[in-house]
Image 1 (cartoon, one colour):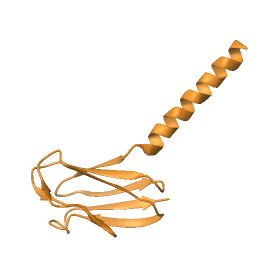
Image 2 (spheres, rainbow, N blue to C red):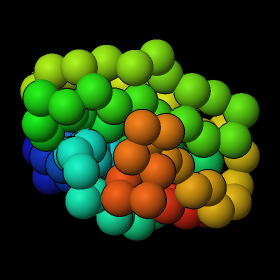
Image 3 (cartoon, rainbow, N blue to C red):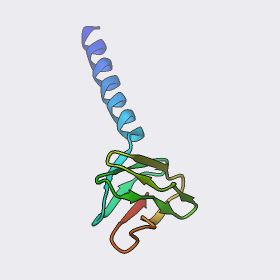
Image 4 (tube, one colour):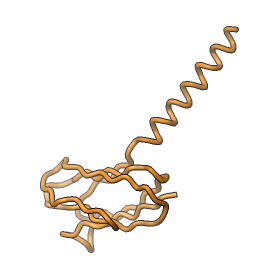
Length: 103
């Protein structure tokens, strides 16, 4: 009986770890010169964190943040459909881009 209880506890712990990872946001440091590709599952969230004190926003198909200024500011978006999404800062569109691949 103790072996069964220990095995059940290990399985529950592993399941809990995977559940937390599934709902954790994928982070992107958002600053001039950002060119990053991230892979997430459908329903996953990407969180952009300003890495410098310049003004930035986050613009993708069907969503946009307001312009925020200051290191440490954040914006998050949850991707509900599969696909490949190009995200830009409209202030720095040629030097700030994230490609989000949702499976």
